[in-house]
Every structure is written in C-alpha cells, then in structure tokens.
Image 1 (tube, each protein chain N blue to C red):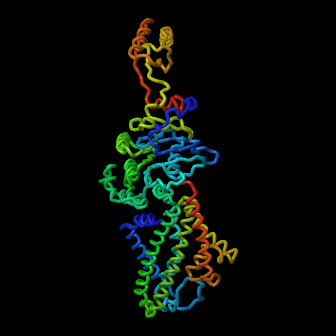
Image 2: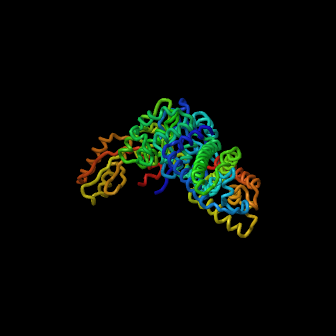
Length: 263
Length: 325
C-alpha cells in the first residue's frame, strides 16, 4: 500500500498538475466568491431550504467559507468524473496490468492509490478554501459585508467544519466513482451510470417519492453538502453515506482482488 | 487449413534436461473462459538460463499462460512453480520477474523516465538504475519526453526497460517483436539476445517462429491451448526434411519427369510446376546428380535443380497447421 501511495504521488507531483490545480482553485475561488457575495439576498430565508447566502449569514462567523461550501456542493459530480476517469483509465490503458505485475497484493495497491488520490483532493480542497476566503475578503467590502467575525476562533472553527464536511462529501463521491470504475472497467459506461443515476435519475425518483432524499446516495450527498436539510439531518446523511461508501469500497476491493486482469 | 498436431506424437519426447533446475514448471495448467478452453492441461518446463521461445498461432493460449505466470489470471486447474515458488503465491516471486505482456502499457502524460520511476516505486526497486536501463534500450535522449510522443517501437523498448527493473531472474516478454518495422525487429532480436545470461531465463512469445529462431535455445510450441512440443530448439521434429526441387524446362513434361524419376527409384511430390524429392539419408550431391541423369535419360532438360532445407518455421507450421501453406 505504501509503495503504491508513493507511486501515485509521483504521478501527481508534476509542474503541469500543479499549474492546473492552481488555476482551477483560483478560478473556483473567484467564481464562487463573486457569485455568492454578489447574489446574496438581504432577506433571511428558511434555514437549509436552499443553497443561497444572505448578507446576514455572510456577516457571521461562518461567512468566510460560505462561498466555499456552496461552491463545493457543485463539484461532487466533477470528482466522480475525475475518479472514474483515473481508475477506469488504468484498465483501458493497461497500466493496472503493468502495476500488478510488480505489486500483486491487489487490495493494498488499490488502497494505496485511493489514499494518495484522496490526499491530493484534500490538499486541493484546502487550497481552494484558502483562496475562496481570500477572494471573499476582497469582495466583502463592496457588498457591505462585515468580515469582523470571520477570523476569530468561531470563524476558524466554522471554516474547519466546512472543510471537513466538504472533504467527506468529496471522498464519498470519489469512492463511488472508484467503485463504479472497478465494476465496469470502462470510462464511458461508468460515467454514464454515475452521472445519470446521481443526477436526473435520483431527482426524478424524488419527484415521485418524496422519501427518496432520505435514502439515495446522490441526494444524501446533496444534503451533506448543505449541512443537512429539513428532510435529512446531517447525522443521517453522514451515517448512510458512510454505509454506502463502505459497502461500495468493500465490494470494489473484493472484485478487484478476485477478477482476472485481462484488460 | 487442417490442424495436424495429433500427428506430432508425444510432445514430451524432448523433455527438459533434469540436471538444470526449471525456472518455470507448470503441471496440468488449465484456464477456461465459459465454454472456451484457452489453456488446456498445459505441462511445461523452462530450464534456468535459457532463452525460451514460446510459439503458437494467434489464440493458442500464449498470453493467457503468461498472464497466469504473472498472477494476472487465475488458473482453473493445475499447479506449478516459478523460480521455485508456487504459482499460487505470485507475491513470493514477482519481485524477481520482469515482464512485458499484451503490449507496452504506460501513462501517456508522463515521460518515459517518470513512467519507469513509477513502476520502480511500486515494486520497491532503486530508481537509480533507470538511466542505465534507458541507455540499454537506446532511449537516453528521449527519456524526458512525454510518452505520447513515442513511436510504437520506442514504447516497446521502454517496455523492455520496465521489465528489466530490479535485474529480474526471469524475463517474460509477450510478442515483443509484434508491430515493429524490419529495423525494429532486428534491433529487438539483438536486445533479447543481450538480455540472456547464465542466471537469467528469458521466456519470449511469438506467433511467428522465424522471429525467435535466431535467439531461442529452447522452444515451447502450443496450439489450441495444448502443448505440441518443448525442448531444445534443435530438436524440433523435422517432419519434412531437406529436399531437392526439380522443374522441367517444359511444364508439359512434368508427369513424364515424375515417371522417369519413379522408374529410377525416386518418389516425388508435385508442388505446382515442380517436383520435390526428399533427400532422406542420401548425399544431396549424389541425389541431385542421379535426378539429373534420370531426367536426361528421357530427353528432359531441367530448368531448376536445387536443394531446399526446411527451416524451424517450416517444421513449426507442419506441427501447427499440418504444413498446408
């Protein structure tokens, strides 16, 4: 596991990747901060009813990372796509075969790869949060949003909480993407299933069955990103997502370890 | 084309030299995919230190066999050892095995050197050997270029370099010559020859025996997943032997020439507008003179009279497709 972790980091530790990450994080921070602060309403809405910020909520301790939290809630599918492409790409390129000829402990190899990729996600997410706070701080005066409460102990605590919530959500999206890729070994098929299921399919089901939001992974991940909703508490969302991720990751590891590597 | 492997006889007639330990020893290995049997009760021995050519037509089961040696595919039946370790525990021997199977597979966005560094890290090998390996395969100047700019031949050579990471005792190369241009084939043959060493065994597959004829000192021939022959390359059964080919100046004289030769005690086989006479145990020079005299006695002028020797390829084709070319 450790050797694969190091090898995966070796693939990521490149100037090209660093530049792409920096540009993406900067773009995310700029867009999220601008969109959230400029569209912030002066009226307070029903808590958890929608993913919008108000001028009042932005002025509170968690206001510094509100744009980050809202922005990250839209990146789950992107992470799913990236993990499907990365893992299924190892099959289609034949590189899993090349790796397994050198490291036959398959579960360890998969765990090392996933750990490295999730560590990478954690670093990128941290960078995105820092840049979003910086961008929000720069824009806030123009919207007459006070930043006085942002950098106290409560503000930092809220920022840490938002970071952990966002990271857990993205780890779940990543794990589901990895599992899909392991099961079908094809980028387009895995992407098709993942996007259709967690996007329109679950929302269509929710239209016909309102309790769907309490059970389906895509909707639960939306609830997690929102910090809980009126229908689904944060605790329930976290617990069920953890269960789904555990099952998906366990099945994926089992399948990866047992199936012939003919690709 | 009809297969004629049944006519080969006992495939174990040229058994491995018992004085040499086997680098690869497989017993009754079988792999099925549904109803299709890819490898059928395969029993082979590859002595240590040889360059073993693993030959068979496309779909014969070569790649599946190699994949089982590398722990990529699990056999349904059978057992074996690789470098003295059980086939069922690939983690016990893969650190001493280098392989290139089903073509070179690398990360296209990384450089050749970075690809090797990734593989060295996964296997726990020292990355300091990478420059030397790039030099060995002639890629020093292109080592820092991204892989997607490499030609197929360069990727194949990088695949060989990857297989050599960790100085393996067993090298498994699956069709390394496939897809290369003539210069690349020549270069790869030379490289394979250089890779053999007293304590290193090279198992290299091809569906064209001629590609391996010059570098192999041990041959394993399989067809339809079954063993057809294994043993020293020189012991590959010679079913057709050397022969003399004659052709009359006038094609219409072919039947009359065959009669004259038969009358002189020489059986012949028609091959287009020529006749082929097996040399057998005769002196080829004396036989050629006798054939010429027999033709001349009937007033037939020979336009062709030459000796042909069967190559390993001819013998291989005889075994796998019954010589029907």
